[in-house]
Image (cartoon, rainbow, N blue to C red; front, side):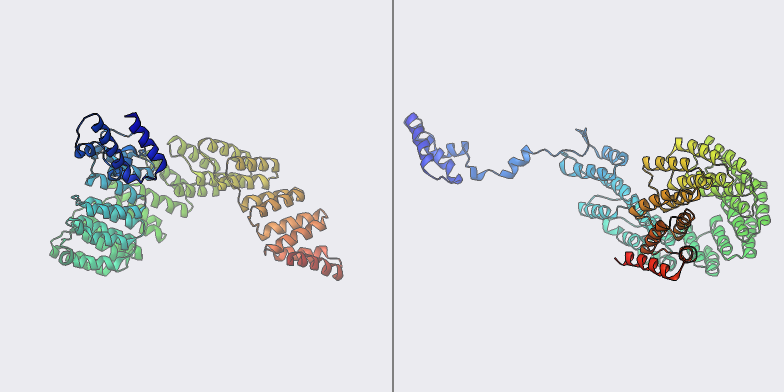
Length: 564
């Protein structure tokens, strides 16, 4: 037997054996060995024990030894659709959520997606406006033969509408039935709302007329109300009134929303006589107008500057024990601010906070503006503190407005104190920094302005052209024009172009210090950036040019520097 093995080794060293022949050679050698030991084995037995290498599936071997790393750890050993829905919904990283979905499909043993899992991931993607993977998943869903529900398509249609893609919303509605799902009035109403949001008013009317014949969907009162809204927004209030009158013949009873929509159409036109008439019809029907109906009427009077009439409507609203909502407060507060009635605006904002409503940043800024304009900066600061206590944390716009007014009244250190308080809660914006830096520069507090600038840079808040302009003007004001030039050079390095006024201020500051060479240098920089103002040229020719020859010489020098 040893001799036979040596023979086999010798043969392998002398011959080039193809991989497909190795098994056959091995089989024949072993057969001879077995025969020498008087053991009879059939060729079939040997082949069944030693399968030729050429018949082994290499891909199968690789897959058995290859493990795909899951996108998250720990990955559950047992996975059910309900758990996958929870994983996809709770995952904050959208890309990771999509990877989790695909990993479960391809690599988790025995797992199958269902309607709920598809709905969960498609809803998340569509709300984030990631429509490319949404369309891919919808194609997979259609091929999968999974039984679908209409809610999935309603979510996609709504998201397309909010994203400003009405055509995609319409296409999604039209292909619902290709998934084996019957369209209902819910998906139709969602589509019509999306079209109204995107000002496709004529298409709304066309779809409404053909809804039953073309799509097999019977409109309801909500569908009619959407049509009324579309017609009023198109300024076809007469057509909307005609539809309102025809609703009973279509088997629908108009409701408060129907009449409020028509009322809003007249208000948009400024036709308050007709709006009042519609409001009277609401009362004649025995309905109690809700906050929305009252607010629409108030808004109409406010837009026409008829604040007294708006106040009467609000009083009537209170008499009928209808609670004002957030929009009601916003409409009336803005009207009071427009009329410079800061006290009433402040009182309404306090009422709003007492009722747990959170006013918008823009609304708070308007109230603070009107308070400060009337010299009530203290009241504005009290309002700011009240917003903090009510957990309605003032944002950068509110704080910047208050800081601006404090600085304007010369109360820069109060503004600095307010800035420090605000800084504890959130990161100040460039606007907030600029307001305070401007105030410090106006008062000659350049050291404090520089400290604010350093603080701004350290915290990753990039200064803009306005920031640099304020600092340049500030240094020129205290007769430190050289520092102004340094700031100008840094500004240009960062590709933030100063305005004409900045160059004029800097040139004037340099001239006052008798630094004529620096004036020419700055004027050349201004010319190269194409922001030379009349003031700069006037200063150059009137103040600096003693005689025509020297003026021409200096001018040629400036022009030659820019030409090169």
